[in-house]
Amino acid sequence: MVVDGEFGGNLKQQLKKLFDESLKLTVSDEHGLEPLVAASDAKFRKLGDYQCNNVMGIWSILKPKCSQFNGAPALGQAIVSNLPTSELVKSCSVTGPGFINVVLSAEYMAKSIENMLINGIDTWAPTTSVKRVVVDFCSPNIAKEMHVGHLRSTIIGDTIARMLEYSKVEVLRRNHVGDWGTQFGMLIEYLFEELPGSDNEVVTTIGELQLLYRKSKRKFDHDPVFKEKAQHAVVRLQSGDPVYVKTWAKICEISRTEANKVLQRLQVKLEEKGESFYKPYIGNMIEELNNKGLVQESDGARVIFIKDFKTPLMLVKSDGGFTYSTTDMAALWYRLNEEKAEWIIYVTDAGQKEHFDLFFKAARKAGWLPDNDKTYPKVNHVDFGLVSGEDKKRFRTRAADVVRLIDLLDEAKTRSKAALIERGKDKEWTLEELDQTAEAVGYGALKFADLKNNRSTNYTFSFDQMLCDKGKTAVYLLYAHARICSIIRKSGKDMNELKNTGKLALDHVEERALGLHLLQFSETVEEASTKLLPHLLCEYLYELSEHFSKFYSNCQVNGSTEETSRLLLCEATAIVMRKCFHVLGITPVYKL
Image: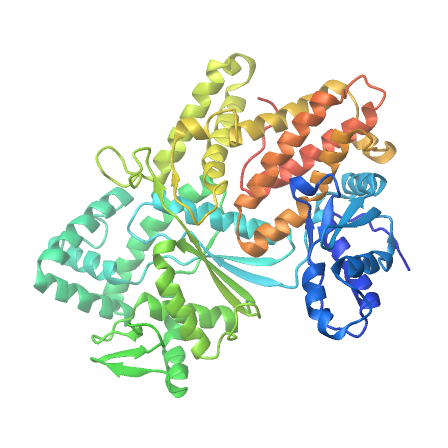
């Protein structure tokens, strides 16, 4: 059987199809066996580019009932013999206890890259069975400025959304702002008491709102009478009292305007559907849960008890008010039944893990979600660690205040611009070019410094490290991209014409290594989006720049007999780098 090459981007998926077909031929009586195909680790790379490395596991299943083979190596040889002929595969070998090593065809890889250059990087987009996903991220509390604590949720969530969007998934980006809780009772009651008759015009900025919040919180914590009034105010607001709703709407408007300034600078798109949006669905949601026998009374409150959890999920407080668990349940019901989402992803700090464990188990108990976390519809809590200062403590200003996110962006841009001026770019570029490049580099450095870490770990915030032009930083990667663009410009060639008429070859060992890494882009995006780990894409991008550096050091481009082929390889590298930047929310620069 001959499988014609489609010259697609996902090598791993194509190899898996070949091994699937071989397994069906080799052990036709056994169903449900799946080959495990992966790019070879560095120590096995001399043997092959990829490995099928679960032959031993398959043999352990077959051994008690199969006399056809006398061990895993023999089974491996049979799988290789039955592997369909393909332009993709140059050769296969079986080593050790049954590892199947696959050497790919350099000609096939070259044609795949040529195909991408002609038809675009979207031909390398991963494919997935999921059609619609909700990504719930950012989600600041109303009446507070966005601060460094919102940085991680915002950029991790945005990158996850971008990875899925590139994979042709419809992504509903949701900003589930806290606009319906206790803080509004405090704020509104404090306004009514301290500034009666002001008709909401006394507070017009986020700074004034934050000052008001601090004063009301202080009073809430130390004045039991005021605390009780504030709690009643929440109930009146949640019941739709027009006097309270009017003041609430003004507070939300001020907060929303300020948050949007930050999101625009970060180039993050979100649709706000805060806690208040789900109010109309709460009654029916609770009634449905009650009809299923899940809701119980406990000290005047209405709750759902979950096995192995000491604290139940509270739907209605004893005073009649709702909790964020209430709105989370209502939001999940809406997302499943109205928005028809197959996958709902929540991006919040690790401190909320217990809440999400309880909330998800309540949804499973209600029958809204399957019992296992592999079947759709499914939910995931994407947790992340803390950002610490260089003193290893929680990142704060010298005055021990939370660092405002807008101040971080300003500082990143200022430092980036200073570095460019130090290199004399203010004399070479227009003021607009200098400003735009400083912003792209500064904001990109801020994002990459966060995203390159495994999200579950804490990391230390350092402007000096993130703006360094050496090592695993956005600055280094943006420089690498600008360098490739410079090589192409200096050639004087029309790259559009070259793409359609030129031929690419991967004859040199470094050409081949670079070409192989380019073709692993699709499977990297697939793995990063499936595992919800953006740092995998950061690793890939850094390794791509390292491969290019080795290629350029060993292979002359301009003026060489292989100039056309190598310019095409340069162009392919630049295209993949730009797509990585896009998915990470970083603006590429073309000269530095």
